[in-house]
Image (tube, rainbow, N blue to C red; front, side, top):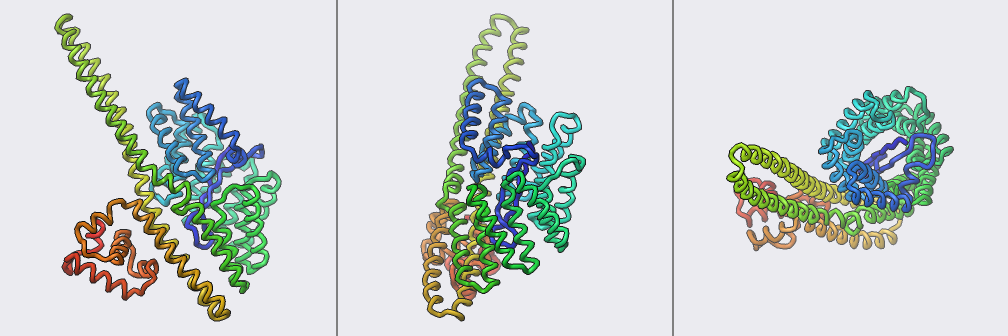
Length: 518
């Protein structure tokens, strides 16, 4: 069985969404999608993992952690998937489990890619591919695993609109199997790349050819295929057909209850077609539904994001426990040294040297292992905090894009239906206040002591000026701040001047640098 993950990020942009698929490329059933949607299979894996822990079977522990991570990732529990891979990585690197490391590096690359950590994502994906190719030559892994690595890197470049690079890696997927298999998922991605490169004829041939095979094996990747065909029809100005394929993709997604992260983007695409067709009311409704769906998946009230905010405390607790264990080991070392000293007096200098050397290397290796675990935990904690800060900034920028889009639609409605405009404008105003409250809540959770520290140093700052300081800390420019706060750019400049004056900065000192240091 051959697992692929297909990524398409940057929610709200044309032809881009937050997608994750793990697919079975063979013609065997059931597919990964069917396995990972089966709660019974999840329980069986969990029970097997617990048994492996009980029996101290290290290889099985790592293998089942990787499988459980796949379950979590496929269901959208990315924080839990990340956590399991980190713990598997510590053991796999220590025990030099190279086939398992191929899967772990690839999984980490996928998760880093999800959170827009481009450098770390590509680094882990390429590390997985390099190790996979070496193991394939040694016949220690199957071709499917190496083809998966090529496909993941192709997806990395495709979502960054490097379509020619993506095609090179997609060709490698086929080359690994020496063109002996029909690969409808690769055909789908190739079709999308050709679509973006302007070769509509080849794109149509590949997308519909892939559609035929995906329907035949009832693969969940058909959701993506239909969405891409909708994009193709839109480029061909066949808007009714485009709407038909978007709706088919959405219906299939809702029917199977999988890949719900696709829903906001599909609703957004449908809204765009309604705008083109002049049906503004449907467009507004679909945009609202898209926003609601997105917030349900990725908003501050979602279970996943609540877990993300809890991860920091969890890792801090783990680090504290590790430090306690290190202190305990040091105490044991001291006690053992005392015992060794007594033994040395009895048995002589020769035996003293042997025992001292043994204890020295034994205890040093144990401390190194504990230090490595503590270091990895700290790195893991920092990674999560960086992810949360990145996610906060991305959320605010997406909020700006949504507000601009809704405002533009309101202007169109105003010219065509004044009564509807007034009603929608009132709802829009309430929604803007709610968006700020949600943003401020998320900011406070990520930057716990910011407001407290700032008010302590500069108690004369007003509530409005504190809002400006929060956005300055996130490196927002004046235009972005005006959109979030629903004020003019000139008002932003005036507020910045007042803040500088209250803080007491001179002309050459940077307000951005000062706020960022708090």
